[in-house]
Image (cartoon, rainbow, N blue to C red; front, side, top):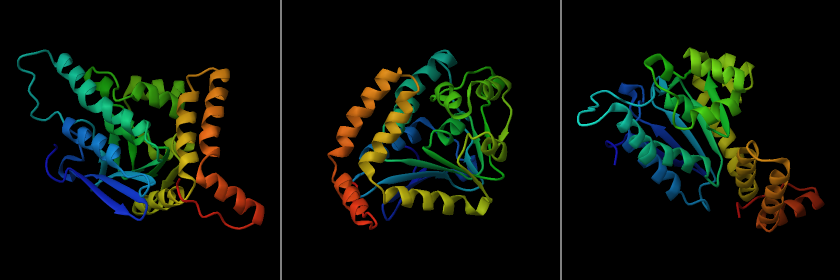
Length: 263
């Protein structure tokens, strides 16, 4: 387990708000914190929780991995980094990507290193105007990790992703919004409000269909057209057999508002 209260979970209606809570360290993350994030995501009761918001405490979203005080005695640094990624960070990122409910990231400040990867992994991304994204790995002779080389090209396109990863320069939130890499760029004091509003809207939607959409869209980028259409057919079967489809179809026929149950 991570240090006490390093991750805070608050349930607001049908939304789980997860806060990285190490403001004194700009929410730099540890392997234990990502273990806890994985466990939190795996433990959510999706019959009650139908959307997730991830944000940071204080003035930053996440400054990346916390390497302060880290000892590499008894082995090479690269070997230790590989073990940490394979055993801790990667399983948490895979759990986030494969979740059955939508994830909104509320980027309230600096998002660097694996913190930038985490921030850009949201299905919807809301950032404050003073926020920025920084793939700083190259500046210390490392490579992006936690899925960064997979996520960034999909979010911002290969040329801009290569620029971010090879040059290691800050990408201001307003520039990220202009290139279509994030969904909202709002005043700093409106980030959580906007993210929670989006989460609440999604949490009131047809959860089964939304879960299938997020998986289809992520997987389709590496699939052939034929495979993508086959995946759609299978997902349509799942969504079409849901209670929410029956509710939505009835509401459409009667021209009333659908009250989805998330089932």
